[in-house]
Image 1 (cartoon, rainbow, N blue to C red):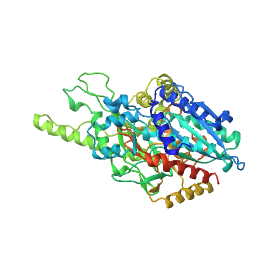
Image 2 (cartoon, rainbow, N blue to C red):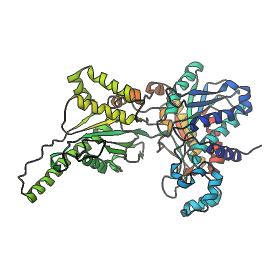
Image 3 (cartoon, rainbow, N blue to C red):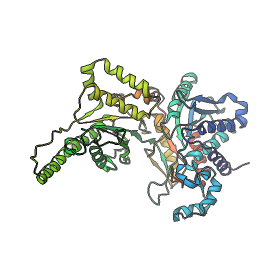
Image 4 (cartoon, helix red, strand yellow):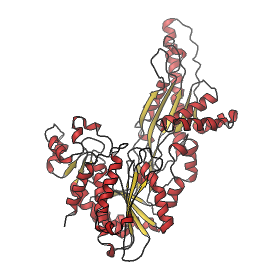
Length: 543
């Protein structure tokens, strides 16, 4: 009989060899590959209908989610544990001249031995305990670990009650479109078969949280993510008359200097801090070169949350934007006064007044003067651009349209949200099911010294979409300040709240996810972890 570590390593290497870069045909190919592997198992040769795929709705690439259900026969039960993982990876461009080897882990390892690497990477490479390659830790090995568990349990159905559902999703690395598209299928299972989803286990990667950290973390939930955005309208001028204009890029730069990596903006809840915000994009909207200064600048930030609601984030950032605007007006007046003294020009204060609005305020102002025309024009922008442009750019156009509608040319900063929205959640013991999950995980951590539990998975995860801690009121505040959310990022909030599945992460352990030195630690991922998943799954089912 093939040992778990041999089986999982071989399958991991096979899956790495199926390039499944997000947004490519590979995301489709790997689903078919895994479906065929599942259908080769004796259990599914007898239960052919218990392996199936589901189209991701409205996906231009026609990507699919994959499901496989194993039913225990010891005693009839509707309890079900979901084992889920994503199958897409980031690009291989970071491998540079090694791109051809990025999905060939053993050849890649041989080549790496010829390179000048850090001592840590060399130690890992020569130890033989690590498997390198794109997707090795994020997260082809996680799929393989789940596959082993579903295979093993399918051979032992008379020993347990309840069901185990394997779910493999694409589109995680960008919009989480796979898991969002899978929610209706989970609802169908619940409504059609009275399925009681007691928990979901994600094997997304975990790794050191600081240098020398050897802990293997089990996460009881997932960090939330918002994308607060700023449209800054300045005042254009000829470069020969610079003080007659107001540069939106300067305002944008000041916003970055006060928000980027600011630990005071880290969100604290349940004993844990999020990483601080970081800018993901800044650009002015000037299309070509000329000697007119820019009119508008657009920027947005990654903003992790543990407990902070969307309206609190907006108000916090509005305050920062107001301070930036006030300080910029003061600074430019000081510069202009200095310039006037040098050149003998009479100084008169610059005409700028600081003004900051959140989107819902701007929208209400436009509706007051234009009524139904506002929604008609915003809908027209959505319908025209939604399938053509990056959704963040579509949202930005909607904000610009409101500014054009109110016919106000004065400088302003508008604060709003763009896609994506990743809900925050963690298992806190709010009901008997969650208390059972906590007790089981506590039992694991007490027996293994290197296993530690934390509340929030610190990286973005599909687990965000199985339970939501935001209240209805908080989500409504998000929606009214997120132009086009229902079309651009339609999260099925009510369905997720109806499912309310405790979602934990027991991930494969590795280093350098999303880097060309990405690697997974084989002894844990291929030996210890699958045994833990098997044990936790059976205990959650009541066995």
